[in-house]
Length: 390
Ligand SMILES: Nc1nc2c(ncn2[C@@H]2O[C@H](COP(=O)(O)OP(=O)(O)OP(=O)(O)O)[C@@H](O)[C@H]2O)c(=O)[nH]1
Ligand SMILES: [Mg+2]
Image (tube, rainbow, N blue to C red; front, side):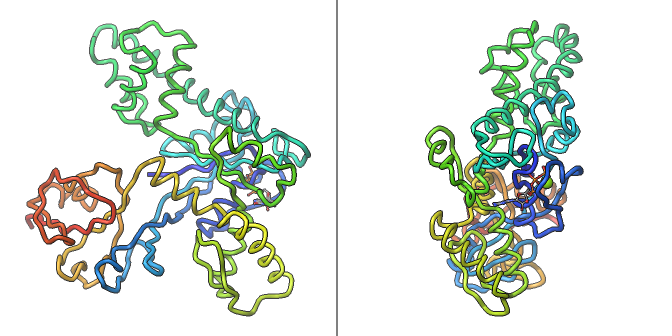
């Protein structure tokens, strides 16, 4: 499951991405700094079972801090999008293709209104326009892909009645949308029994499918510069999270260097020492004007929201030793896996390895010690041992 970071140029997408991945993505105050997508690993917060189980964990694929497990998620930071991008404006729609496999999109908006629609420094731009244009642009990009594929599918669907959903789903699989989503979107658009689609029908279907397949959440970035009160004005109309990506980046970098103690997503930090006067002043500004006012910088919350609330994932901990909660090397609670809510034990087995799935014999819910079957539904924070034939 990948999360894409999108928005017009110069809004802070790469800053947002960089603060989550601590990669060396380029950040600069002009449009189209990013021309090639940045791909990196960010971490969502989950509750580590170590506290409940009274053990000290030894994570392998993730990190645990004070009972909070940071679980990896792939992030994609793309080039800035301008109106008409789906027709090739700006850097064209090549970067949209980078988003094909993203399951959710975080739309970074410059809530301060200090960049115009092309991302150039400006004043008094209404961020509401950006919210609308980006959604339209992504929907139109979907619509163009659907229209192209529909032409190829239509002829066959005419001859093989009843196959329309599977034929179309197969064609659209590159967009990361499931057959179930395609069927539901066709039904909601009233197109299940209609083979004669107008452009309007295509756009209607595209919008519904995009909303199901790539939900957009909005990060109201540069909240520190929002002197016009755009956030307050728009928060009732749109679901906005206040964000200061620049502050998150400063905090994470200072923490990485051992200058401060900071837990991502938390509303405070402690100074350890070694900070220059200017840096200390900048971080104190963040504490007073961002952390105390909004509770956090908002970056981590956006990622957590995308994964847990929008995509409805849970985290599950497979182990090999059900008493020690460890793998065969003795690592306690080594791996955390993110799985869609409703996933079953057998799906977890296949996720660990196709051989484990293929040779599945049974499983144990390690918290209760009870045996569970292949179709047992997993819950968040489950610790599961899977038996497979060797
Ligand atoms: N004040 C303030 N500035 C920010 C914030 N986030 C990013 N910036 C600044 O905004 C400018 C653009 O940041 P980038 O991260 O390069 O923006 P981008 O959206 O990736 O830009 P493109 O790659 O050109 O599309 C830089 O000068 C950043 O330092 C923020 O939360 N507050
Ligand atoms: Mg960028």
